[in-house]
Length: 191
Image (tube, rainbow, N blue to C red):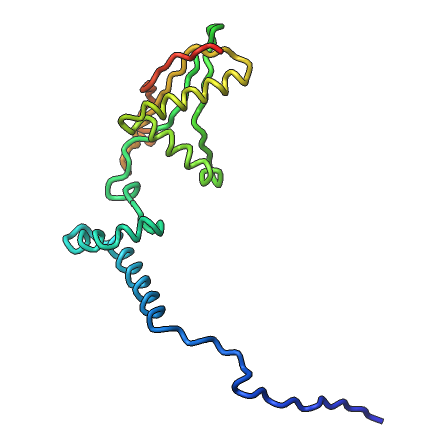
């Protein structure tokens, strides 16, 4: 003997019982469309070749691009990439005559993504005019790190280590030697 089960028929819900999204107002649709157009114009202006039209579009869209983080600077890439590689280290002279070296953080591979801010900070220390307050604060922080390691610092010198980048196809792939360029020195107060 065969048994079958039959589900009871359920009536279709009435049209007024169905939850439908409320229609979007004309103002909302206009606002969303305006943001999409502004984004597209800004992105277009960012990648367009230099021209009067590009300058006009950037003038119009720059505030929006800055607020949203869509502004991009591609100066790292062609046609004129950086001609040098620079790293920043701090040299600490100590009372016992030894010298400690503290590189500004940086990493390779995936670590570059979270260490990038430190590399940019180091770049701003040597590149930015009038950064005496930042340099002094960084040197003080380095002296505190050295003290915490059990040393007695007397002077901190910030040094830019510079290496020329050879042009593509250069016969010397190393591009020359690294140079140390001190750019800030400050005495450390004894605590």
